[in-house]
Length: 100
Image (cartoon, rainbow, N blue to C red; front, side, top):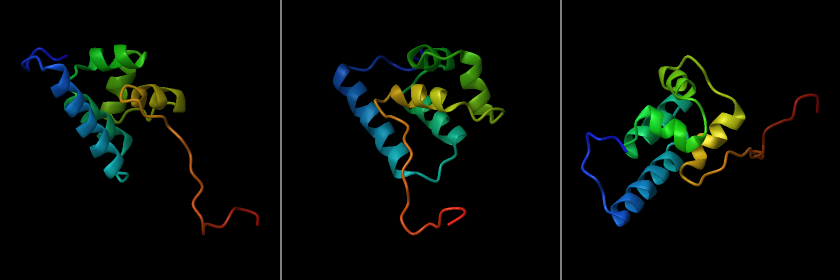
C-alpha cells in the first residue's frame, strides 16, 4: 500500500476494492490506460505494489499507464485479477460476422 495514505481497516479496504471494481465495470468506455491508472490510484497502490500483486513486472505496469504498451491478454487478465475480475470476450448480437 502506498505509504502516503493512512492504513485502512479490513472493512475499509473491502469497501475501497468494491468501489474500484464498480467504477471499472460501470465505465466500459475507459481505455486500458485509464482503467489501470484508476485501479492503481483507487486501491492506493504504488506501481511496484500493483505489479507484485498481479505477478507482472513494474515496467509492464508503467508502460501501460503511460500508454506505451497495451499489454497482452495474459497481462490484462492478471491485472484485473487483483480485483477478482477475469478478462473475457463476449459476442454482441446484431453484428455481422466477416465473410457471412
